[in-house]
Image (tube, rainbow over all chains, first blue to last red; front, side, top):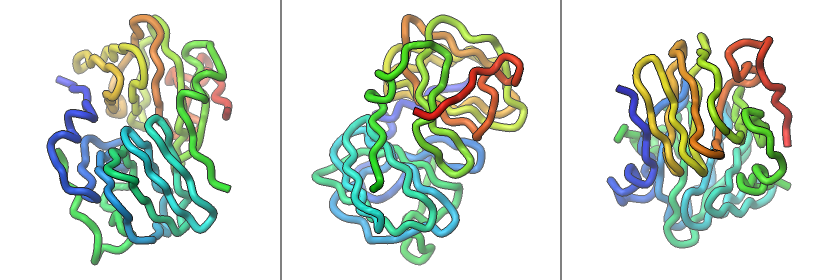
Length: 117
Length: 117
């Protein structure tokens, strides 16, 4: 039977920040929930855009093209190849979409392992 | 300057149901907001999954594999090739992701024109 994904329920299953959890897939992309806290390193994805929808909290996405402020119900897609860094003011909850297997840090050596929950 | 997309603000710009509006793009996909009201015809997309995230209201997605109930903060991805029909109980507001140029009805002859707002 097909089943809805309740984002808040999925987010309640873990605590560690910057550790995206796959909740479903869309074509060749992972649909993920993630908690942000503090600053992530500046990075880029040379081959893909990067989708952020803030569900809770306040996130600034610093980019080489300027900064974007995101509050609940607001989204931003970082264009491919653009240097960026998300910063959470307190804890933030985010829906993230990236191609399957993409290292979240832009570099496999420092990337979080994305598991399905 | 990069700019956040505020989903509620975009949804306030139009009223007609079943007329998806493009708010940004992610790789080869349109990120859209749409209002649902009543029933949409049963259809399928042979070549792509179909992403629905309910922002407001109550949506049932009837599929040939079973029905899915979606309330705010809940999402479901209809697998490609699966017959489905969204039904809104009252008005519902939805974030929709589909490949660029995809006919929302599964058939170009009956599809809504997707414009960017």
